[in-house]
Figure 1 (tube, rainbow, N blue to C red):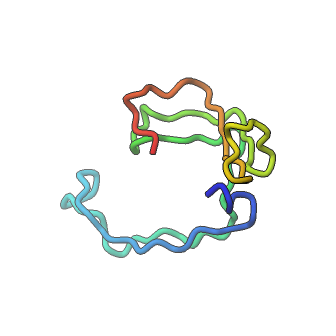
Figure 2: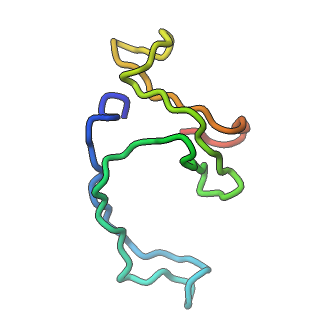
Length: 99
């Protein structure tokens, strides 16, 4: 992600497979659903929201984005490639998986 960020890459289409979901009639998502094709290059902006573990209670607002190309913190540069760095509106608890 660090090497591709800001270079116009667009995520490929995902194959959708219906699965069990209590929020749908008969407890299963409809098989005809699909994700729309993504046409905009992926990027993060201040005021975007990020969520961990698909849990609305673990939603945070991005307050700052430092792209890999603009990274100046030496510990965030590996083999000449900067890391994407984001700052959130509050700390993420250690119990939240951040992978």
